[in-house]
Image (cartoon, rainbow, N blue to C red):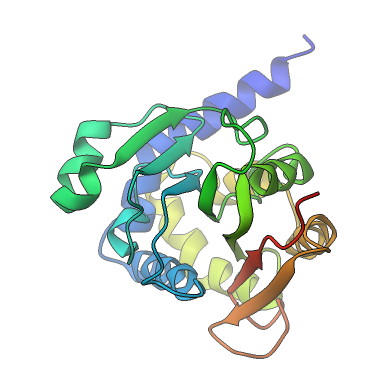
Length: 240
């Protein structure tokens, strides 16, 4: 069957996201502390958190994991886009009333964002590009819907960098193995199909006419092999 692999992949990943994901990453563990660190690092790259913005788009927003870390709220709407169904009421209950009032949830593919061009003042994603089938198309869409002089922030785990693999081998994989019926290496193989080196090259290409800066964490050395996270910050400077 032509779609057998897609169906099998969907079955395994649906299991992962419904039965493993929350417990593995967001329970009281080293993984949850790492996620907290990742989310905070993304918010630190914005040029001016006091700047008034109208609309923000978060792509691959999941169950709203990033929302508690948002420092400045747009005046009109904060849009959460994800390819999977989310529990909007549950997400709103976990954030401030001020943020909940402007939250909008959109079920859509990041490769075809259902908004007109130049609509958002800020666009962000956390740990998304490793998962998508066509990261170049997602990046082009992110740029398309961003206003001129608007900002984009993209947080990327450094998989398969050396430090990233060490953390997986000694911390992540043993813990996930205890709570998952599928081998963690299989899940990573299906989930992280795109290499950090290639993703960074795609980012440099798509945003070559814009202001682009790449931050590394937890160390400041410019090497994805020796860090756990890269954050690309872009100011859209070219209308083309």
